[in-house]
Image (cartoon, rainbow, N blue to C red; front, side, top):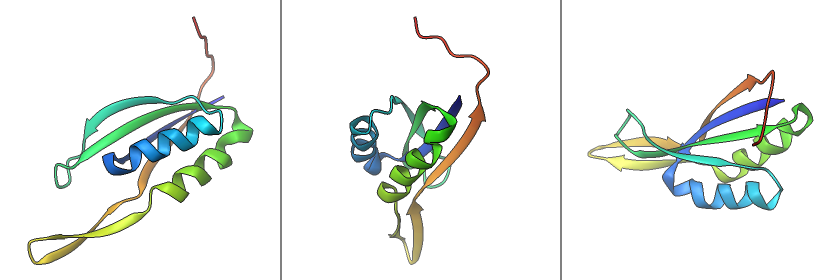
Length: 94
């Protein structure tokens, strides 16, 4: 079993959670704040079997696209996702 920790922009969260749940993936949503631009982020915890990782990553990649915003005179790319994939030795649902 694997635990995916996905940090995504708040703007992408509702559509991403809906897509994951529509594909029968369980998701736990945690509000978080990013250090860069102090923008709103959401941290998603997604537990999956190893053979489902590519499916989840495809959904995240499809929805969490990078986009440019104007900050003063600079154009900055935001969006996308940061994903950590961790091995889980044991899992229990009570």
